[in-house]
Length: 437
Image (cartoon, rainbow, N blue to C red; front, side):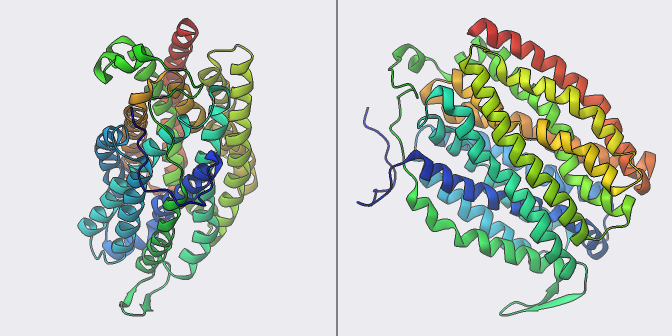
């Protein structure tokens, strides 16, 4: 079969797959900046649009997550048929433009439409990236290569907290801001204009990516039997792997997304901090813990897998949950900011950076012509489970049970309810991976 090359390569185009990973990393960084910057602007948006925590949770979770999932499933099919770097470029253009246009939002419906656009655009990135990376690296280096890409989420989230916290404090928490060609807008609207424009400036980097040949496993051996199977037949045969693994990690994602969404507000309400102070404290912690956990965790998983531990991916995560979940429960009761950051460090190091080795585990078993659909199903399940349930349940609990001052209690209840389920499901996945190996 003729390889799908996409855009015509330039004569001096660097062919190393690490260049592709570097470009995908840059896109992932800005995707998370665009995605999570709103988490620092809960107070001014609620004030200006006259909405409560529950309505805000719909913007933070479902408005983004549901369309990210639905379009992501279609994107997985497109990734398996058309050039991955072209699809990536289209997605970057869409979510950058959507973020910029969100700056014009003057009511809840318009802001929800902007968040929906961001979800649609970003849904193309990860299936394309997973397929490109899986076709470019050998199996025993796949988790590490995936981790370098997914570190973009850590860096993007960290930048959103560090730089975004200072910008939000300077702009979003004050009155109107006058912008050239646009005029007077609220400070939080100006933030959306800035981050959307920055994303669009990155778009030409897509030309640097390499489109590897398809229909070739990462180890170089042809496998016509695997190529013959359909996506439906694959799921019927191996649902314990391709469905249960995303469900198990999705249970972790419930608390992960809830933390990303509500911990900045928890710190403001519990410790009397402003957005800049929260951004500095949480940004430094998340960058340090996330980088260590993402790269270090993936390297440990790859090392264990190379040594014959065929269920290394879920096993490592189960251990991380057993260590970090009790510490998070202590963190939400810490009387001081220092105590909170110390107690929560383990979660952001051991458990939060799970996407790289979770995705790598599926790509180890995915037929080459179905990589995009396997990745999009993985993203769909962890996103629906995490994004829809996590932020919304916490918003409902604060509005109707604990009150705004009880955000820590709401997050604790969610943790206690979901972590044991994640461990139970992933233990079943680990058994399946050992049997398949």
